Image (cartoon, rainbow, N blue to C red; front, side):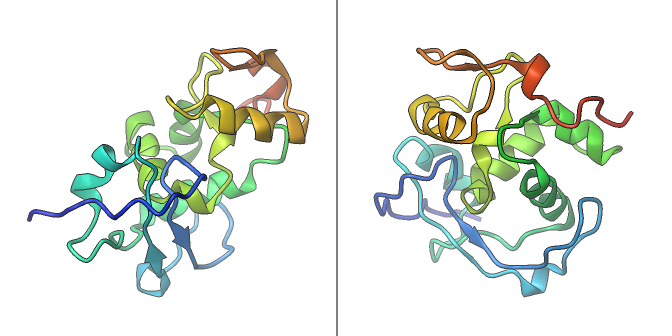
Amino acid sequence: MTSTPAPDTGSSSPPGSSSRSGSSSPPGSSAPSSSSSLAESTSPSDSSSLAESTLADGSSPPVDDFASQVLDVVDSIPPGRVMSYGDIAEYLGAGPGPRQVGRVLAVYGGAVPWWRVIHSDGTPAPGHDSRALEHYLAEGTPLRSARPPVRVDMRRARWPTHPSR
């Protein structure tokens, strides 16, 4: 199936900038995918990664159970705290790993506080340092560096303190 990326609408809420409607169910539960309505717009840096996951009409595919669980976990991260992609994969247990968590955020992440999900070294998603830094400063997120490369202090900001194993 060939699909094309959605047109750039000038949105400034990377990565991904889709909106999602759905349940406010707790992490670990899943919302029915048929109730999710998604609209897609991308920033220029996101368009290549979204090309294969955008439908021909420019909309996002429906949210599956894993994507819904990832988005629910991201929604639950308190302001000023962060989780790594791997932390989220571990929290959700068996199933896809950190790369798939990143993929979910690349496609659907604009509807959740995406800046609270970072690499294990404390850096935000590539190309989103300045936008993420605005959020970190506003939320009081502990930082190791506010200059490029922006880096969050993972020892002080990681949530929960001890991810479930």
